[in-house]
Image 1 (tube, rainbow, N blue to C red):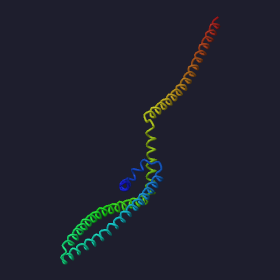
Image 2: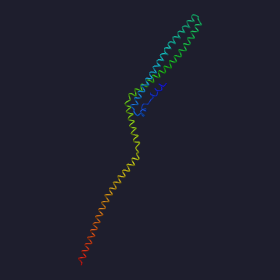
Image 3: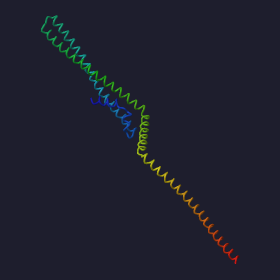
Image 4: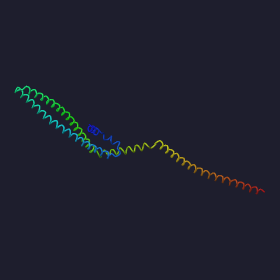
Length: 221
């Protein structure tokens, strides 16, 4: 029964589902193939035992039929010889042989059903093994690709998009502010220089006007 359950577990196994959880896909597939090989050995050994048992039962059925025919012939002979007592004994033994034959034939049907089931499971497992072997390289590549893809997705999820956008906006705003400060500094410097020049010119003009007034007053005297 354990062997049958193991057949079912392996034959019904979804290879891609198993690959989802593995860390080393190639190692996992080698392990699965090894497990299949081991199970096949056990299954074929168990099937061989059942076939041997079937052969024994078939041999017993053959002897049971021969025994039945023998007692039937003895019963007929006893009747011909008018030996009813021996005929009765022969018929009793014949009935025993009939019952034994029926039991053996039923046992043969059951064991044949088991053998057929085991051989079917073995065929399925061998087919699955060959499928895994044929797709081994492709499955490994798919598994690695899926693993790397998952890793990239998880990395992207770890990045706080809102926070990153906010920091970028703050940086952009700071740069704009620095640029504005630089422009204002240049503008202020230029305005200050112009103001100084005008002040100097106004001062020079006042001095010249005062000088001219003093000269004029001197001339009148």
